[in-house]
Amino acid sequence: MAIVRQTLVYDGPGGPFEGVAAWDDAVAGPHPCVLVLPNVLGQKEADNLKADALAGLGYVALAADLFGQGKRTTLQVEDRSRYMDELNADRALLRDRLAVSLAALTGLPQADPDKAAAIGFCFGGKCVLDMARAGLGIRGGISFHGVYDPPEHAGVSPITAKLLICHGWDDPISPPEATVALAEELTTRGADWQLHVYGHAGHAFTDVGRAGPGNIAYEPRADRRSWQAMADFLAELFR
Image (tube, rainbow, N blue to C red):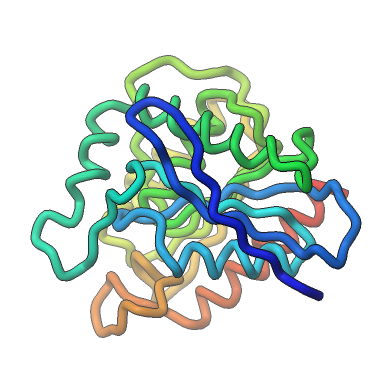
């Protein structure tokens, strides 16, 4: 196994954008492909490592950039959500940036464009759901501690992308009423969906850099179990 990383610059509304692709060059392609959608801070090394891990499972992955080249924040700055806020205020623009990121992934020579999925964390989990809602070209998506409010613009019905929602029960950003509302939305729109809920876990349960205590913190059991659930989901999706 030899995991290859490649910086990928691609154009789109408000771009250019800069992501990082990863694949195992020891395995003959083309491979099913997975878009990795970052949290509030934007594309970063933690997302590149997720792409590496997906490459180790046999996929071509792209840690996507939704904010624009050079537009990143950190937990230490007061206005760390500024780029995310711009997209939350314009979900149609977010949809279009998701579409160009997916096109960048499926356009790689190592990728099978007919076998695409997406995973996302926090804001990225919202992005996965918006891709499914918009009917973008993914077979399935996995949301990790995502945000569940739907966009105002119309989407497709039925939703054809299969969905796995990995949720920490103590998540203050997506409380029980928001989770139930998402379940009702996905049921009404005919989606094939499943919800995995982890006790004693809150928001950001996959983020190893967010030490507890509190309900926005890393939780190792939920992290491990949700990643395994994702691996099983993708294996079934692409078999």
